[in-house]
Image (cartoon, rainbow, N blue to C red; front, side, top):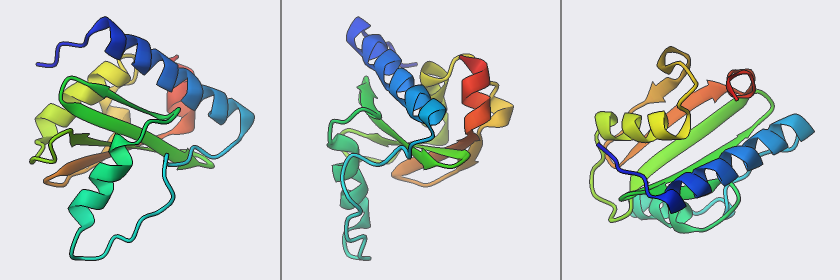
Length: 130
């Protein structure tokens, strides 16, 4: 079970407010860094590098890094461990529950992985929940 610090809660609130602001303004929610070369030799590290970059849509809670991106009507949230180790779906779902406590888990679609977990939801779900 994750134990968010006051700083993690403050960062989460800032990230969610930035996401909501972009949704309401109709502006894309972009990754902190430009797309990296996701060659088969290093795809694991490229995503970890992206997650480590500070930005308005990124944060951390405990040992987990997260970042939102999206445009039009679909929001993508990806989660990785800070050390790049494998991440279970259950661990990632705890992070989602922390980030989106008012959003029903049934409205969040999961694309599971081993090192990263990816979640998708409609913008209207997020706006309606906050």
